Image: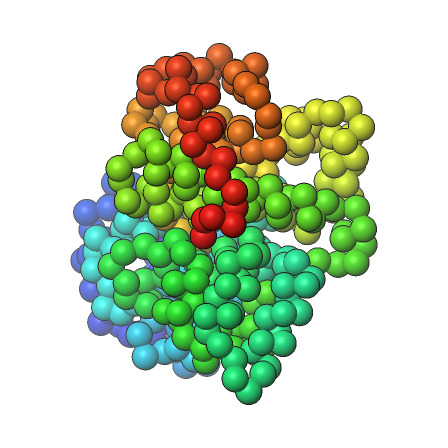
Length: 400
């Protein structure tokens, strides 16, 4: 079945250009065009689309309003904004409903690659109701103490971009949302950013202030959830995995990108748990309680209850948000790296091993499934596990 796309713009010449641009995709895509928000809503009411790409500045109904309505009524659609680089105010308005941003003029290669990459992400998650749930996510909960700290810092007269970056880098939800924005084509960077401190510096103090104080892109864990969700242990685990992953990558690979990405991928690897706890709290509470009582890994119980795990949910969200493919893969498959076709050492390899070693003393060979053993054998890592475990476990304070 072909993918169905809807492009929305009030500029007739631009729509004509898009028709020509997308002609090579006619065997894979069915594409419709709307000359504004109202026409788009009419088409949406009578057809089922996979992707909507909308201009931001349009008369009567701007792109922000249109995509907000699409998010509410057709939440499973991939929502992409197409805007000029001078439209920072419009971008700020659309942070919540938009999955990814593209700039005008947009090359055919950039447009097609962005859409295809996001569509490939859909293969990570099969459950349609969970796809709909994840597609509607516009914020992730933050640690209460860190949320208070960033508000205090931003409201001070001498707010420091370095201090703000360090606070954001300690919180999984904040980190993901800042990386989503800075990696959008709107900001025009030719390499992908995975360091939240660098991302904050690039966005600048005024943009961060607007995002946090006016648009409120960060949210807070509810008091009810804080009472039963093991926040401290999950955050400590995420920090440890991030350090372990970077150390492992540095020990096993000479690829600078893999080494640098491993830290952020390790930190974000359990981001799917934030989706479960914030969007399905009653069900997930039972999973957490049973996991503690029966000493069963939470991801095994998640599979029984939700037909998927936090790993796939997290990878799916980051893929929708346009984060680097290597980071998405590391999050989505950190329990089962053999499910990828890559036979070289990658960011995923580092995160898988870091997660395996985190909190463990002594040999971990009994925790490795036959499938993952084959994966490690292909990389010639099985016989090196003790050596890698020793190399990864530097104290956290020695690293980033």
